[in-house]
Image 1 (cartoon, rainbow, N blue to C red):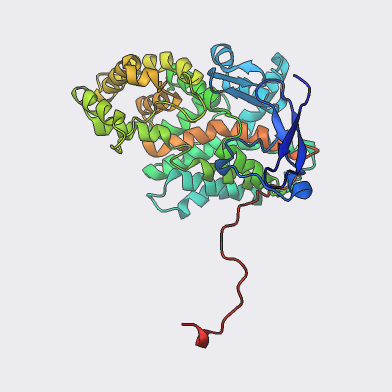
Image 2 (cartoon, one colour):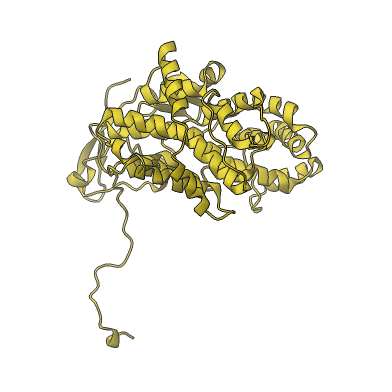
Length: 432
């Protein structure tokens, strides 16, 4: 961490100068503190999409897109993916340090013991249409949880904040599985405390009362790895939404529900679904050259989905981690399905194509996650729900950090107004 610097800004029309001071982070770019820019100079900054604006200070996740670096609380994600579990990563994100054996055992036990849903919550699903999108159901049910747990939503109480985080992390797989079962018209399957987080989720997805279901350990392992890689990703759209909604002091369940709604957008959480749509459009390995040519044509609307990333200008570190697991899953579960053969061939060709290599359009995590979900039997309509289960941990960590930030304020972005200037009302009979 380096010291702060001062920057002199000069208005070329008036010659007036003023100073702005930077603030350093432990790693990554410094930020320029502009909090007094309006009160001191009568100016706002203009940054559509907030691509160059730090809206908060955070100690949770660090990304270096140029170098392909992703760290949770300082730990490289590849180390966590290789040695940790999703539950251990959840503890790390929430509390800032890796747990010891006793802490991890207690945290794991707490999560397992909070997976049940109130029966009245389960009955909510009967009110949804049979073809309701699972994300709509999940967002609605999560938002309703404040009506059931209002006695433990005092955001100023550290114990209540813990209870909330444990409760939502434990129950979001049960809610997701209930949405899936509702879409199939099958009976809900209750959670089992003897199963780990991902095995329990798969059991609730695929078990039926009429027969025994044994979870494939490789499927649970692949899901656990995907959840680690999707647990947090800094100040993305949905995380910023959770922070913004929570900054008003709203109950945390409504803030998480807002994050789920933001994640539902195709530009955010729907990318892995778009990968499957693209593969189905290509249809056959023999069509790959034609579609690669279309992807290179600026005048063609076709885009190669699952390649490149807004943040990562190098290989997405999550993609390199999940690639091997993806191939394992396809070998075990993919069989001879043409779609998977097509995906592997497309990956192979694109990684060798000069155009994509030069522009650093490498496969990203969405390319592999969609293929894995498909191999596990999860339908496209549930892809974003799976994303939401994993990201709930990151949302909780950011919400907790935001709530306890002494400099925290209600979010209130400003604007560049380009509408009409002051006008006087004209009576209707006098209007042309």
